[in-house]
Amino acid sequence: MRIAVIASSTGGPLIIEEIFSDFPALFFTIIIIQHLPASFIETFRKHLSLVTRMNVLIGSEGHQISEKEIIIAPAGSHLTLEKNRIIHLIDGEKQHGVRPAADYTMVSLKHRVDDRLVGVVLTGMGQDGAAGIAHINDLNGFTIAQDPHTAPIRSMPQSAIETGKVTEILSPKGIREALIRFGSGL
Amino acid sequence: MSTGDMRMRVMIVDDDAHVRLAVKTVLEEEGLTVCMAESGAACLDHLKNGFSGLILLDIMMPGMDGWDTIERIIEEDLFHNIVITMLTAKDTPDNRMIGLQEWVIDYITKPFEPADLLKKVEFFLSYLHDETAS
Image (cartoon, rainbow over all chains, first blue to last red; front, top):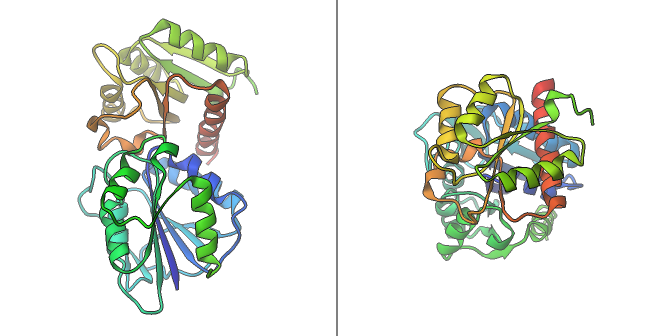
């Protein structure tokens, strides 16, 4: 199974909509950790569902992930994956000042011989996603940081880059193309 | 756009009158209803008086700065039917933003291109429409 996890914070909603505009339904699962107030999560889901052919849903406890799905982490809980397949929501302490934190999700990923993993860190303040990117890289996954020059706030992608474990530094357009290649099995 | 529509309102919070006027001019030319606040305290007053819409919030202001203002908005339970984006000359936010990230949908640096600002304002207001409708 192919699984991508995206870390995104301030400035992310518009960039994510650009990445997924006219995005085809592909045989992989994308999990988005977007730092947003609870009142905007459903709006974020609706916006994405209007621009992509993937199924867009908000993650729920016990959900078994499927291909052609974009799963958005709900506000207020960390989202982890059991055996890279089953979602669990955890009410732990905030990490990097946020809950959900992308690091929780990324670090919960495990090595499975039949899985291919991608981690992406987009715009935002702080270091969320950096530890997760390093973990995914250690699992032989593909890791991407948004080019800080294209990010409204450079801090998160810059922190990921500074781990030395980022495979590619890309613009939103480049990230879109990389995700389509990954989802197409190329 | 209906200029009387509360959901189309934008509040510019900036201690610099020239910035307030420049942003107001750009937005009003697109038919948006704009109100202005010269301080964080004035922003809170507008919210207590029922403002709903997009808040373009400066960071560096005397007294209550942009981060203080967001903290007060949260503490006083005033985050209803609003979207907050920073509009600031600081190209990189300081660490005081940690813990407030989720409340700030975007971060725009001055000087800005009017077309870029309008594109973002339209996008943020669409979030508000959806929230109001749902």
